[in-house]
Length: 314
Image (tube, rainbow, N blue to C red):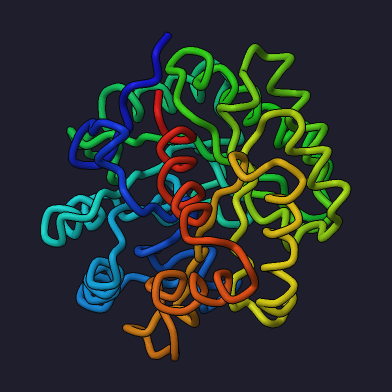
């Protein structure tokens, strides 16, 4: 099957129209369990978030994935509204995040795999839910998450991974995977392969901080999966210099076509919410740090445009 479309909240677009794309961001996140755990995970001021998207656009950005699934703080109506206002392509996600962020545990814990699978499929093919309301606007990616300290094969999570795999097989939509510290990325890739999902349909996020190990990253990339790096200006993990060293190593190792980048933003990482940098940071600053370290602009565009278009198409 030819991969010809990317599904945004405003409708399907051709790959050539995706442009500069961040493959893991958050521009809206409702007040709820996630914000109660970490106050930085609250992005529910429409005007501030809209201003941030305009900053991204002014810097040359065209598209991004908002990685918050339904029942975990997704604000689908706001995503549609800001996409229409700014003309920025936004890809929304269905699926699940870490269960500690779930708004109503009974929704997922009591549901059978088939019911969960159908819910995810419907959000891709029919439209997302905002509370009890079905929207005409569809999700374009399926999210899943491995939580730190928990075996992803445990009963609570394996059911959800099974449902995501069923949805991916039915819709051929890409799967984006949140990875916590010391995640079993290889095991998850093997799980999806055994379910009939091609590795090139997998976007593995945060491995740059979950397991900063060049050899391991090469092993993961050799499966054909995408590695999405977003520990950019997140200095509590490591410096931008170390981030660029990892990116450069993977390029030199022959995996430039497996790399994606994003900002994984919080309210502590957005200018419009009071931070000293924002969603435009890769375009206005980090891009030039990479170029200064010898990563040419052509390669950066392959990562930010060509790779993103291939990863999101189905």
